[in-house]
Image 1 (cartoon, rainbow, N blue to C red):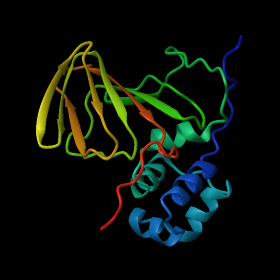
Image 2: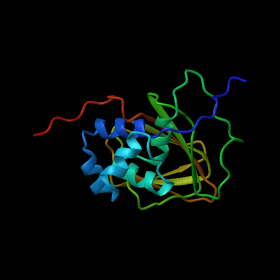
Image 3: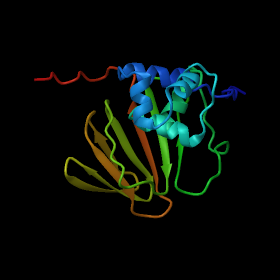
Image 4: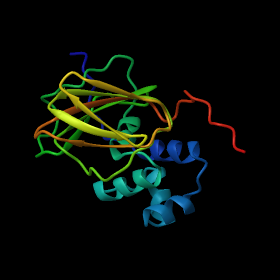
Amino acid sequence: MGDHKEQPLRVGAAVRRRRRALDLTLAVVAQRSGLSVPFLSQIENERARPSRSSLEKVADALRTTAVELLAAADPACSVDVVRAEGAEQVPAPRVRSLVRGHHQMHASEFTGDHDAGREFQFRNDQLMYVADGAVEIEAEGRAYRLGRGDTLYLTGGVRHRWRATVAETRLVVVAVAEHIEAVRDKPRR
């Protein structure tokens, strides 16, 4: 009762919103992702459903994650419960969206490790909270070691990467959504 009713995800609108927010053409996204312009157009118009691999390629081309695109794809709810037991049980590493819909805030839970070499840079601010285990986060040329209960705040635009240093680490990342103009872009010289 009161839980969000599961509906098929429609990622096309989320992909289009993100692409337009970055002021990119389909041709640029196609070049970055290695996917064709017609296929990307079909995704945006809900005539094709991308595989997980294709969605990750699109997300990388749009400088976001597949989890963020899926979260933005689900219909927004003013009150929504995301149940832990309803999450897909897959071996670590795994990521689970904690907020569904097109909202001003996104939150994800990462369990286990991930591609530690992958560098992230988000437009808006984010908070990283270690629910269990430990992580090492590299930001602005400095390494930060965080343990259970520790948080790290990153201002928008800060390049960073992280890795779990303990098995079954759970890291919660809460961020202002990319479609929100939370920080002004620095003037170009």
